[in-house]
Amino acid sequence: MKSKISTLISLLILASMLLSACAQTVEPQTIVVTQVVEKEGKTVIETRVVEVIATPEPQDQPVKSITLSLGPGDVPTLDPGLAEDTSSIQILEETFVGLTRLNEETIKVEPGMAESWDISADGLVYTFHLRQDVPWVKFDAVSGQVVKVQNCEGADRMVTAYDFEYGVLRTLTPATASPYAFVLDNAIEGALAFNSGETEDPSTVAVKALDEWTFEMKFLYPVAYNPNIAGLWIANAQPQWIIEGDDCTEGRGERWTETGLFQSYGPYTMKEWIHDSYVTIIKNPYWPGSESVPQPQIDEVVWMMLDDAVAFAEYESGNMDVALRVPVTDMDRIKADPVLSQELTNQPDLGTYFLGFNTKAKFVDDVRVRRALSMAVDRQSLIDNVTKQNQEPAQWFCRPGLVACPLLKDYPDLGVKYNPDLARQVLEEYLKEKGLTRAEVDITLYYNTSTQHQRILEAIQQMWKDVLGLEVKLQSMDWKAYLPYIKSLDTPQMFRLTWGQDYPDANNFARENFAAGGNNNPLDDTGNVFGGVNWYNEKFEELTVLAAQEMDPQKRIELYAQIEQLLVWDEAVIIPLYWFTRTNCTRPHVVRTYSNTGHEHVEKWYIR
Image (tube, rainbow, N blue to C red; front, side, top):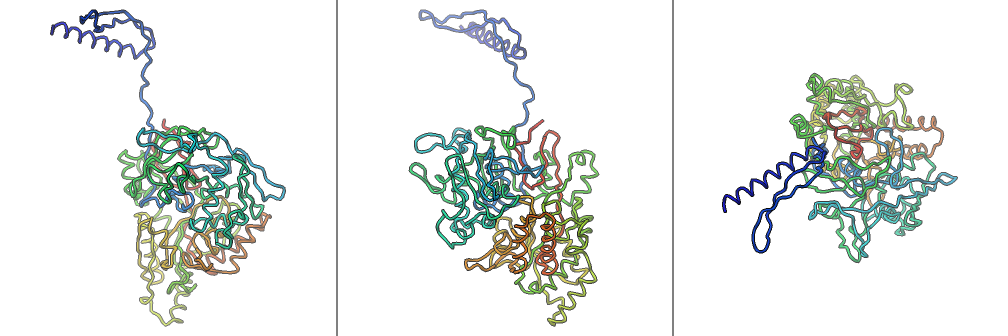
């Protein structure tokens, strides 16, 4: 019996081998299949001849996942109503889609969730016509799949105009405490009064779902960037049922963005968020795709939270596919390396690296100190010897190339430049008037923890010592804690930040950062500035409103030239350092777009 069983097993193995062999071709193959069957209570062996056509197994399957880094520190939030930083917005860019979508390469507005829109004759009322084929989704850990979200009747929850109405109003609701609501305050009729608590009636905000697929917004001014505002993450649709609850869903409040609870509708959704470690986003198979937001070809994207130096080491070791931030300490070596130099790219980016002052803090509450510190920074030397990424020395804040931003060729003497002699003279006047020695001037500059920022700021620290004889201290903080700290009642004397455009207009820089209530100049409950630059200037407020409303392009540029002079020289509220470039390293197998906006659209990438 053992010999029969052994023969049987051998025959079965042979048949399996023949099937495996024929799987390498699509030609029909005749094989003998042997099987064991029960007949009349006896075990017998039968053979039969069959013809099979085997489908060849695909060879060299393309990689379906990639790994990148967001930089050090946890992502502060994945709530569209609360996000204000680049890490949070990057994930939201992939997991949600606004009414409009900013093309990351051309910087032009394209359709997003709105397939089209109409504009009233006065340029104020926009009527958006939404696509009707996008469901809300979530990642189901049990099945390991992205699934559609069901309503209480068991039907798919589709993204509607009512979800966009809820999203805008939730962002503006005072209880939400959105740090970015000021953008909507400055743009949408009724938004400021509702957001400030002047009225508690949300119907006074000029946003309305006319039906499931039609959404209306009324703006304050007929400006060209209104469609950009409509597409920002703060105006995204938001899932009311998971946030507040309904008849069949438990409201999760602020926890709705955590792993297992998160719901979205973009080309990706969030699969897993391990705080302080990584966020994984997974392809949404129910995103129907469009010309501006195609269906993803990469199944999963792992966004690590690593210091730039650590992330680049991972890139060199083959554990990371793209290095979005190349460490300044490695630039010379990378440029000289025959392989890495071919993977290196450098292009302009619409952003600015700057230092801010708490203008109410001791010592830096005097404009002479602020101006002296600004003039003592040799920006070109910083770029040539430290960053080494072909940035441009910034004489003012808004990045040339933005609509209405002045150009260097037209305004060569605008703003602030390196002037060590005048810097010393101005500081000396201050010290003499106040009866202080240099040793008594105690200033600390805060920055978010990063070896790259540390290296840049240590170079500037040395310039201040060499030019002014001042010993400025440096203090780092974790990113998640840093952002609220520098916009609080305890805002330090100086802080480091960058600003990248949300939409390509000078209004997004000066007014939406430094006007009262702006991103870096918040207001308290009584309407007074209290954090960030902690600054109010009536002329600045008037000029920024005039510039936003001005329809003549050349007059707008002239107004922003006045605004920038006031910001960086007359009042010296900030120290502009350099205008960005983006320096990346990308593995040859990754085919990608190169963003000018500071946020990647990975749904357009694929693996060779």
